[in-house]
Each structure stands twice: as structure tokens, then as C-alpha cells.
Length: 59
Picture (spheres, rainbow, N blue to C red):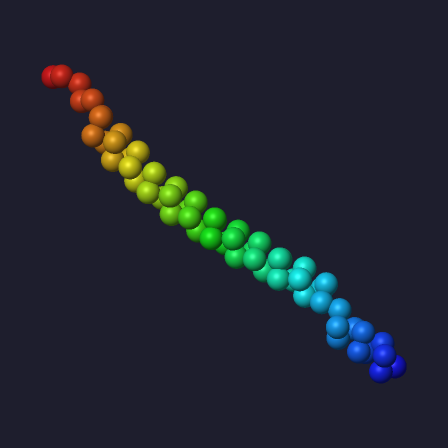
């Protein structure tokens, strides 16, 4: 039983997969946050541009 437990403690392949998963999750969160911020700024910019370019009919 001790040999099985010792071999299990030495096996690090599962830890590596978990680390890669955590890195991928952090990158995903950063990308989503960046895309959201960029989308908000673009929406504001196009709204301002649309208001600036609005043509009022001549009386």
C-alpha cells in the first residue's frame, strides 16, 4: 500500500493539466474583459459620431 501511495505522490501529470487549465481560464477572463471594455468604448464612439453627423432638415 505504501508503494502505491508513494508512486501516486510522485505522479505530477495531473498537476500539469490542472495548471494549464488554470492558465487557459485566466487568459479567457482577460480576453472577455478586454473585449467588453473595447466594445463599450466603440459603442460610445459610434453613438457620439452618429449624433455629430445627424442631419437636421432645413426649414
